Amino acid sequence: MITRTEAAEQRVQNSTDPTALQQIKDGDIVRLMHYKTHRRLHSHDVRPPVTTNDYQNEVSGYGWEGFKGDSNDHWRVQILEGDSRVPESKEKLMAIHSRFRLIHVGQRCALFSNRKKLPKWAHEQVEVTCMKSAKFPKTLWRIETNINSQIPADAPLAEYKRPGLVAKVLEATAVMWRVNNGLTKSHPYESRPHTWPWMRRGMSFWGKESRGIYLLGTPILWWLSFVAISAFAGIQVVMFLRDRRGICDRLMGVRERYADTVGFFFIGWVLHWIPFFIMGRQLFIHHYLPALWLAIMGFIGTLDLFTRRISRRVRQVLMIGLLLVTIRMYFQYSHIAYGTAWSREGCQSSKWLKSWDYDCKRYPSMHGTVTTTAVDVPQPTTVMPSIGGSPAVIHAQNPEDPPQAEHFDPLENENKLNEPAPRIDHDKLNSNADKLNKDMKKAATTARGDEKDEPVVHDDEKDEHFVGGDAGQDHTPTPQGSNLQAPVPPGF
Image (tube, rainbow, N blue to C red):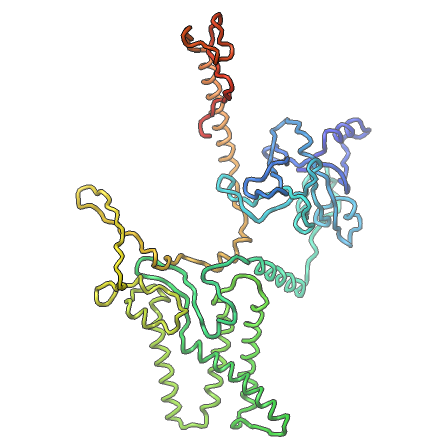
């Protein structure tokens, strides 16, 4: 709720029509008050609770109902943008049409909504700070709802401009591009686009005890699809060069059909793979899956066209053999796809590339023995007492073992920046505040009672080290140079 300052309120009361509405203009100084708690938006030269940069100040809600406040509650309205359809929105603050900044009068910093979240005690709301020398796009605000009982019924209504289909698509694309480019933190299982077609490494999703889930494709389909796409590109280049020399190749009579069918999937594969090279965000192998489906379709088209000239029986044998190999590999790698039981020997034999970093040590051996190195290093154990039985022995983890894979949800990680703030339970907040006030009053009462019961000081306890410790006085001595401390209320 936007309110006037004390000086502005005094001028309005002395005017001829104190109840008249006055529209806020560019450069006006206002105060912002929370409607239910009557706390004003307050800032001072103190670092925020989460962001500790020296160019950001803390912003809090301060005061209570009837509290007059001070100059730290004053904010200057700075209108930067307005709607071209409403010229007045650049000079007067109007809902939806005006985009403005709030500049703190004393600290000369701009109100800024941070992406960082506050701790649990603040219900993990987004942190709001006052930033000095901030960029304009980070400190722009807009009023979406305006409620006032004195607004006349015939007042003009403001509404957002309804974009068309093209504008919606462009806006959604820009937002997706901006959000994805903002995910620049590193991750232990991230990978780059040039390693995806040959599946250099996968990605661990979850691991516990002797089971784990690791994202890895079926190697034969993954690699043959990339071979088919690469072969299409190579064949097209060769045929183009031969056409330039006057040699017209028919490619066994399927040149046009090959260019139309496989060429369509090749273009789709390129459009779904190449854009990732210009992204600076963290990337994973699952980003290649849309391009993979197109590459597999291109492989199927290539296989169908180039096996038409061979005998039917040979073609059937080739297709059945490819199907059986694919099914065999599916069952071989299903253990890490579904987190089922597996053996250590089977896991190690499935690693065709050394860069596949799923952990085989977690699986038990088929022979019931544990493989060790040439030098046996004794593992430390901790004997824990147990009730009604033998002591429990806890084996420490081998430091050479790879870390346990943790659950990772890429979609959740990508949407963390867009999570809405949780709903605040105002009743719970008010009850906690009442309880805190009662505890403080109780502590203050106890402190006053302790002051009345002062201990008696004997003559042999008085010396020159006590301030006011003369022989003719009878009071509790205070050590010289000590710090007086107020009682700490419970809960602090």
